Length: 470
Image 1 (tube, rainbow, N blue to C red):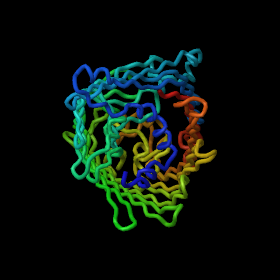
Image 2: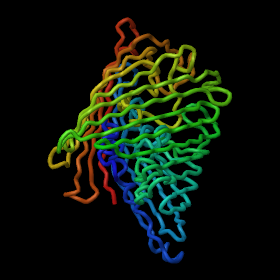
Image 3: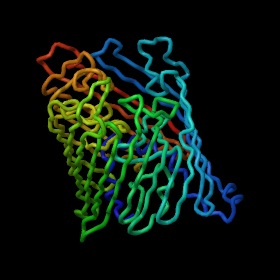
Image 4: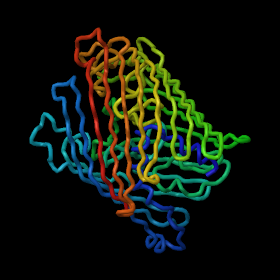
């Protein structure tokens, strides 16, 4: 790929490292061979998957059930036929089982975090027909896509999937075939100019076995449509990438997302890199109506990142600013039906991000350190948030005024201090495809003028997994 350094730099926070590690099992879906007959296509079917264990812990001093635990075993099995006349078929089954490890103490049983409220989750998340050639790849059916604000959120055994149609076209330059190694995405496309479009009608969340027409906010929607484009090239010693995306979350919000990245060498072993991002979101259709109350959507995000890489290690300063729009949803907060702090915004951490926090600003530092001959990757991040209208209730409760949680009065200038870290160790020397990872964060939400413990609540979360990909 022309812009190798640019692509390496895009996942600089610990959340992104966890995301990449979770993608390993999908990487086994190699480009299907081009068969001479339908029988050959079936014989050339590739099989891949993963098996593993997850452990999740969440502790929050501001809630009565202040500790939640979850444990699950699970994995996935994927099949992809060879291509006949450009056509192929993909199937993928996914499962997660809690085994009832924490069910004897319901007050602290957080199994739904990994396996839904039934403690058992399984679904056919991929079932698609694909057509491909050097310049075009199109899928219809159940599938994964990876776009800035509609993606997989790989934090359970069951990534978010969608039902509909999606395609990637290469306008300048051809693709090397990598796009078929996982979800449809422009991030894996190697063309100089490429575009992507998707129309999705239903989705299967991380916490459900079923495809539904609703989303994070509403029980029934008409889905969404998105168009995106990416241009990557180089000028003298600077490699750069420009991308832009449009989303229409029908009946809720329209969004534009833009991002620009650059990387330039400073010497033989170090590079200077940077990024800028912008989100602009407004009403769509009849307006946004969580809990039956209509609110206008008026959200804007401006972010930046600047850093240095030294071989495989890197460090960067990060920041995001979200202006207030009083009277709108969350007084200027975002509507994001199919994305949950998955590293799109530069200041996303494991449990915090402006997707849920609303208007304000954040700044911090993030990095990547590789040791033990690159087998151990450490991704630390520290972020200071200052939220114009802070709240300590559930981020997924929208029944109060302006879409804030029910019974919670937002307070001005809530400070949240977050330490976030990810650790990934490659155990391929023991067994090819084996890896272990731990993603954790600790945060302290502070507003001394409030006696409500929700505004003065240190909390801790941890996700540990052991996975074998084949």
